[in-house]
Length: 134
Image (cartoon, rainbow, N blue to C red):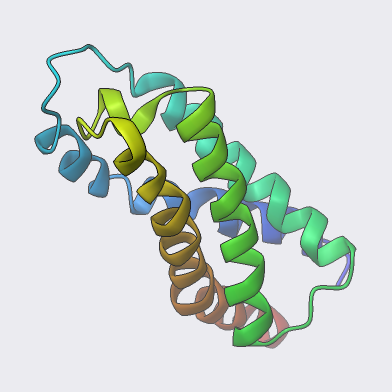
């Protein structure tokens, strides 16, 4: 399909926006009193999701739930690493300090893997199937 990269980007980058209400959970979990600006995350995360998905598809990501679970887990590890070591998200958002802040390195891959394998993969399959019918 000629527009598959554009379609893949649109599907994957819209996914975080539809899941953005989960950000409310992060805000409610905020314990440290520090200000955390979610506005940059609202821009960067969808762009990273879409770009990563297009790269995965261009590199031949198999159209299977298992492949998407592993690709999502890989992205989750990258995002959790950035959040933990660069943006200090565990401390500023969840109030995790010391060694507990590294829990994000476990949670990120699990969460992103689940989103990619259980939400993105079937959504993309549905959209591509419907586009094929048109």
